[in-house]
Image (cartoon, one colour):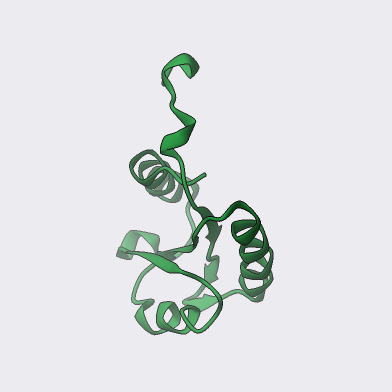
Length: 102
């Protein structure tokens, strides 16, 4: 784990919303989260990104772009088709460490 003294908060930008899916269907709560995420992102002058983990979710991710989002990050892997805490946590942690959302 990184020492807090060595973390540069200026490296972290953007607001992310988790695009929950069950059996390949984006859940309705995601649309509500996009609305709140958009408000927060606009207030902070940041981009809004939806993160979707799953398998064969191309069409659903394209549909998310019809909402007021700036980006959709799609992680497509058969292991992510159904929620499991370890693989989901690993992927989300790697993305956070790499892309540094605010």
